[in-house]
Amino acid sequence: MAAVVYFLCALTSLTCFVLLFRAWRVSRVRLLFWSALCFAGVTLNNMLLVIDRVFLPPSIDLSMWRLALALVAILLLVFGLVWEEE
Image (cartoon, rainbow, N blue to C red):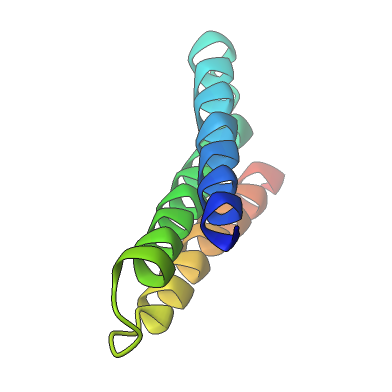
């Protein structure tokens, strides 16, 4: 059951990325671009979660990679928010 939830989270974040990217291509609002990049990172993070928890044995732990990717995704959004404020 947990694998289904992990997969649905990855699918939801991928959908958010696609919708934000499409909106950015139409309007060219930079905040949409940074939000899309953030959700791209979140999507990769969720895909790593699926790989880590479902496909890899418990002896292999990708939690540090997932945390680093989540940090990069959030930093992209924070950078976009600060840059738009100027």
